[in-house]
Amino acid sequence: MLTTEQRQNRETAVRFMQAHAVPQATAWDEQGEIPRAILTRMADQGLLGTFIGTGQGGRGWDALSFGLLCEQTGAASASLLSILTVHSMTLQAVAQWGTPEQKQRWLQSLATGKTLAAFALTEPDIGSDASNITTRIEPEGTGYRLTGRKKWISFGRHADVFLVMARQDKLPVALLVPRDTPGLTVAPMTGLLGFRSAGLAEITFDNCPLPAAALVGRIGGGFSHVASASLDLGRFCVAFGCLGIIEACTLDAVVYARRRRQFGVPIFQHELILELIADMITGAKSVRQLCYHAAALRQAAEPESILETTVAKYAASRTAARVAGNAVQVHGAMGCSSQTRVERMFRDARICEIIEGSNQMQQLMIARNGAAEYLREARRLEKGTGDGVGA
Ligand SMILES: Cc1cc2nc3c(=O)[nH]c(=O)nc-3n(C[C@H](O)[C@H](O)[C@H](O)COP(=O)(O)OP(=O)(O)OC[C@H]3O[C@@H](n4cnc5c(N)ncnc54)[C@H](O)[C@@H]3O)c2cc1C
Image (cartoon, rainbow, N blue to C red; front, side):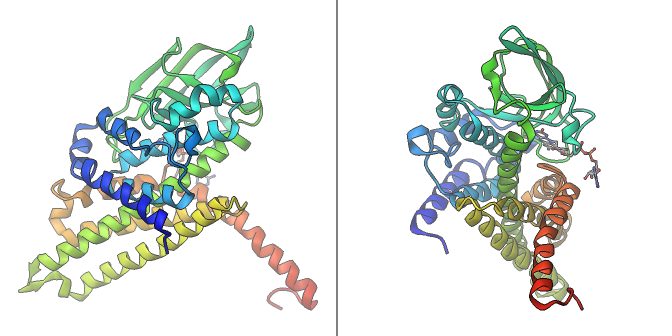
């Protein structure tokens, strides 16, 4: 059940996406670009900083309202969702770990969308094994020099500032690097399976001079504090975005199955089609519960919210890929054509199983952290009964 305020916030997101994103999303996908004007419109409505307090340029929305915005964005355009995601990840890092000076310089500007941000962790040779990134800083004078390469950076083509993960010697660091920093170059990436209008780029840092004030959090806390909080929010965004993909695909499949006739009846009357649709509806309803649960824990700042968000992202991305596949199947040849949005969603959903940590990385995290709960329970039962679990 949503509160009145959450319903209103959801309605704001629905209205914006229906007016400005849903009708354009396939054209953006074909052009490989989302016009900056759309992001400016989102910014004008405060939709790029909803979870930041009103005194700091945001809208003060709760976690579920932000999730509902991600759901509606994902239903409209996964590329737009990815821009919202990486911008929010940087905003979160500044809000949580920024010094008063960094907040003064960046927080309001990011929350109002005047400045747009991207998140740069992955490198050409380092993806899942993120603790072994090679991008590095070396102290120089009162600041640093930054050297390295980042790849697959969503919105890298256009972002005004990058939250860059690097190392000083062996210690992980996070840095805010403005686009106009000398030595920073951007090479657009094309030819992607999905997220085609997310503005992906490869970023090279060639001995870039940075002031000491570029450092976010402490030296050594780049992963354990800054990146982990940003990635937690990123998974939250992707989980809700996948919910949007699932709902949109299910809607289109149901409508198409009622209209399309084969063997003299709507294909909705064929039981094997109903089986696909039942799977889609069940997927939508179960993922919604996982996402709402993660949002409630996030809002309450419960430590379990990290695990529950990972579970939600893992389940949502797997379900989105399966449901989008079902939707293509229900549409037959039409599902293989850009005349339907399920074709784009099928490609985009597959990518959600790789970004913000691949599903294998999510599985490792869920099994390791989730198992601890069960081991605690086993010890409790052992103590209480004197019997081993399963005895
Ligand atoms: C569209 C798109 C947008 C992206 N946007 C960004 C962005 O904005 N910023 C950013 O920093 N990065 C971004 N990425 C990169 C993304 O985060 C990485 O692709 C992801 O972390 C996986 O890394 P990798 O591709 O190098 O795969 P690899 O790490 O090379 O893994 C390859 C395969 O091996 C599996 N694997 C790896 N290690 C293990 C293990 N220990 N056990 C089991 N399986 C394993 C992986 O799950 C995967 O299936 C983006 C990627 C895409 C496709």
